[in-house]
Length: 290
Length: 233
Image (cartoon, rainbow over all chains, first blue to last red; front, side):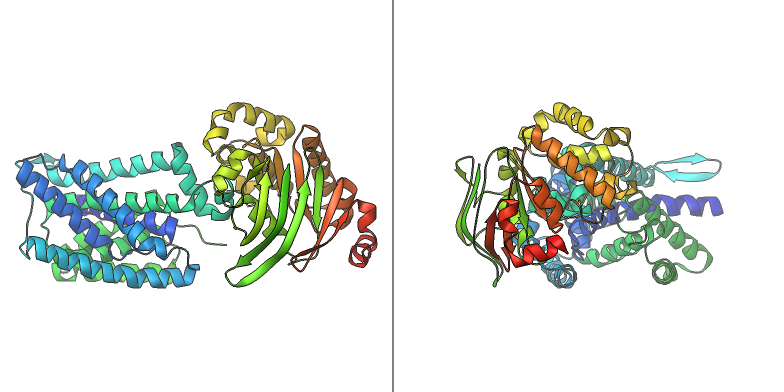
């Protein structure tokens, strides 16, 4: 039974890691703490839901649609809103972007409510009930896909940041934006691309949420909160750390549900969050500054 | 080659430069000297395009560059080594150099530029896969200069290359700067170490409180009390 709980925790945790990946990238590069990240997950979920129900695409093929549409939405939101805040000094920037993003999350929620109603929707894949059983442990296909998709995007992001010129420009900007701009790197373009990629990753996570659970306009806050916990667990700026952070949160939640009560699932995550902040504020895999 | 004509530069409402003019001819080493906060770095940042002059013109190779973005200015052939190097500490030496050739024009000739930089600084070639943050102070400065050379500049601007280096390393650094100049790169040098700067440079400008207050050869500048006191002191 314990094996089953661990496996479930890990497979759910992979999704948490993916949700946090975009938030962590955006925060690491632009120092924008986008608390509307969960709303971007929600939009990605709807993008997939409509592609699935209107076009009849396979649920996992709709990832392309959620990725691309959220990339564009992210670029648009950055241009329209966040590009105005990045010029501020760091501390004011974090405070102001928090306020702005809170406002944005309320706007997005209400727009979704207006257009798509408060009904819960979900993508029911034809293979939803399919599962493998290995050593008496059940591996549902859609949960396994969480892990596969999360690992795929994690590796893809890592390769993008390490191998391409644009990726290197992003890393250079994080390390020293002044020197980066002297190299002829356009910092605002770097911020725009990073924000758009972060939003696109949120969109992909939205697809998985729609397949695994259900989506509704007010779902965002839960996912923003999870992403924040995972980001702090994994350590800011560490991409592999984000996935591991997600797995830890997933396992913590699943064991709490089993041994205590599923009512305390969320509490366990927040307790973990506080413990890490108290004892290891740089995160489990983060490097201490200075 | 580079001519700056009476530029005024502001940080928001705060004026930092008043009618600064200077002239750099092809092949020269020009020093820009002056006390802390005189506006030396501001001048370099304005030439690089990080700051835009509110008034006045900057011309490079016959083109007005005062309103051009940084990447265009780098492509035209101006490269700046920022104060204390500002290398990308978390990236490898090789990646640092690669980023020096970020603008499309330089990217095409990355290979040749890399060979040239490794020839000038063999140490960098030995350490190409090492994380830049693990380099010593002298090596970091070499990397910063090497990175700036990767864009194949015709004018190299150095902001306090002696900063934080041991005296023996400073001498080596200045010998390298001279060597780079002999290879045909014009140099604009900002230095607080006035003695060294005046020894190396063909001509110099003295900047005080955002204004050019003197210019000429080392000898000419020694007639200024502020220069003399720091030169002899």
